[in-house]
Image (cartoon, rainbow, N blue to C red; front, top):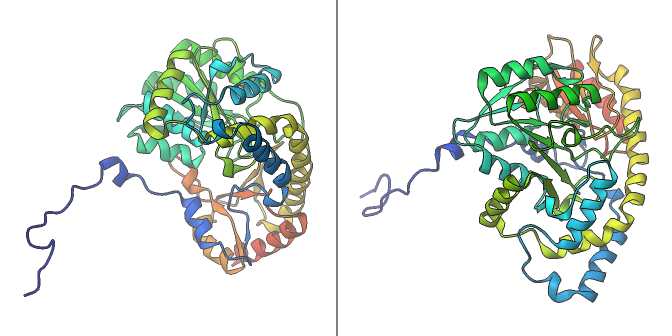
Amino acid sequence: MTVVGPAAGRAPVPPLAARARSVGGSPVRDILAVTARPEVINFAGGLPAPELFDQEGIAEAFQEVLAHTPAQALQYSTTEGEPTLRAGLAARITGRGLPTAPGDLLVTTGSQQALSLLATVLLEPGDTALVENPCYLEALQVFGLAGARVVAVPGDADGVDPEALEEAIRRERPKLLYLVPTFQNPTGRTIPAPRRAAIAAVAARRGVWIVEDDPYGELRYDGEHIPWIASLPGAEDRTVLLGSFSKVMAPGLRLGWLRAPAELRRACAVAKQAADLHTPTLNQLAAARYLAVLDTHVERVRTVYGARRDAMLAGLPAALPAGSRWSRPAGGMFLWARLPESYDTLALLPRAVEQNVAYVPGAPFYAGEPDRSTLRLCFVTQTPDEIEEGLRRLARGLSG
């Protein structure tokens, strides 16, 4: 006799939580899995150029740690982070215009964990999170997994519009506003200083947390550093600043940090205890040593990435259909393009992949109604020659 369904005497296990069933995976990760073939020139990822990793310098930092402090490096650590790394980070942040003490910081396992911890401690199911439009894709994923309502704030080429933000806060009563103000993912845009001040003033008047994510700020190729929102009057007690070593040191270290007011930082530390106890001690101690030479390494990376950005900008007029528009980012890793309205970049992606080139369609980055004519290109992973060839392939793919 054939048994249909669960075996006799065996009940089915309970279903997944509703939040796990309702939130899908990352479309970018899905695209990377499909386009992993070595012949594909991949503008879809957000991956640093592996040939620029300072393998010798990082290896030396690990060797020094294991030679001089092996018992400490291989032992459990504090949830807040290794004191030497927090001190080095605090000095680095202070040097960029935001006075910071080691105790203001929580070291996290990548800045993505910092975002997840904040969602855990700030958002109840049904709460509202305001975001840019378009928005960093994995932020949408984090807020969705927390059960939040995600509402996009209208903006323009300079980012979120302060008047629209004030109206959204009045109407939606959100817990937080999430921003990547400098070299945003996916658009590459940077919010100028006057608008940052206006956003800070709105947050002060209306009472909302600002989560200021800055993974790309040190990758500047043009212009001068713009002060963080966290440093502006009115925002000091309500802004959480997130940072990462993934783009300037190595993503495999999985090291990030958050700087937050004391009560919120302590809540995040408790949430981190429940998540992973602490970020790997060995990696933290090696990174603390590597901080002494990080500026030299970052300057080398900036020079190479800036040339790659310029190569992509030079090739876009011939690669994209007539009537297309695109950003000219002053730094970061991404360039955002909008094709004529008749183009659907999601539908066109298979044609591009047939030409052995890949990009990310813009639609998944929108919290609301998407602009299907948009796409994101990463310009840092390929050499200028590879970028030139990749854009030729892209032109063939978009022409059909």
